[in-house]
Image 1: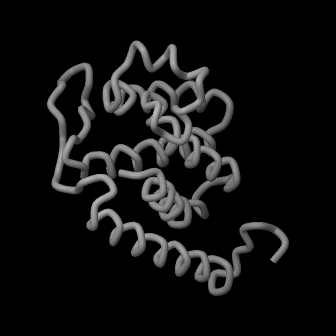
Image 2 (image 1 turned 90 degrees about the vertical axis):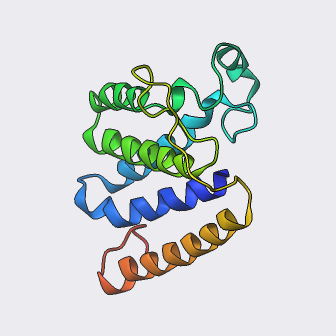
Image 3 (image 1 turned 90 degrees about the horizontal axis):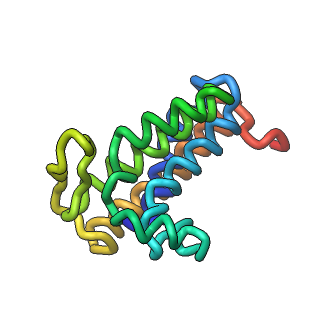
Length: 160
């Protein structure tokens, strides 16, 4: 999946779950980091294209161990030492990224190193189905944001 779809799905997950955490902005930051960090292993990604990540990318393959539940769990535990909302947000973003990448034809080996079997479906990155899904996610995100701001009377940004 493309970054825009991962981001829109991360926003969707944030809007659904943020009212259940103590510090919503740390949770949101964690979601964003979780969505981004999974593709650190690709020089074509939004975060992985920076030159200082190249040495890391020489030793790992895209959709390899970075796309496993084990990495997400280890990082979540490490982040959880500092803040629970941040750790939960990270895991939500990380899992949302993995979920969408499982929809892709290439799939991911979620249970690496126990199994290298990839879980995959039929969606092609940048294809028509992803484009339609992205637009629907955007519309849903806008709708949820309106619900959160106006109907639930929860003011996210503090200046509404």
